[in-house]
Length: 266
Image (tube, rainbow, N blue to C red; front, side, top):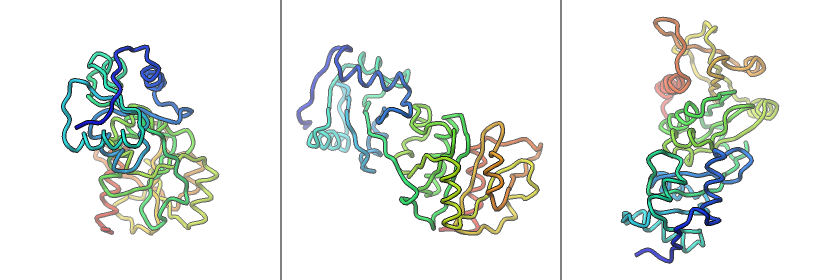
């Protein structure tokens, strides 16, 4: 049985307006919260102890025992839980096909001190496509990697396309947003071995004897890794393809990580 829930029928309600404002702003960096949709995302956020601030549910939907428990837990924690009809859900949704659950969650900020140095790390330098970033989040999560570092002008991990394509992997990761100087200081302080991807390199990734602790660096979709990060790398590597064409970043990421864990399984 669900606990006390506020029923809202107007798009002019301040709670609905707040959610709509965040969605229309596409979860931009300056906003302290972001919007997610769907039971799977809610379950992942809840299990990883992210702070859920507002929870919107479909007034005509029956939820599973597991989701009902999460909803009631939110009520006990004084989260704003509101019930709306499908029409309002569609109006405030991220997607054309609205889910039966939409929620607002507080962004987490992680620091370099939160990272386990002995783990494998992935760093992103200047990626602009949020869909690419989201797929990379999903891939590194599949390999059991917990650490991701976004350097410089890399796209915001909370943009709706990145969140959606991450398939909730975002909630499992420690993602650090930083600049080149702080990244360089972390690398030098901890003797991290940097392996950067570069099409012009002659070092085939298959020939590497990976040295730990390590960090794989992926660069911008068009221009690759910046020159300053290239100079910081211990090794520049490439993936040999039949036609010497570049691979999608998320695909390259998966191929290289697969090889690292093939040689050095956890």
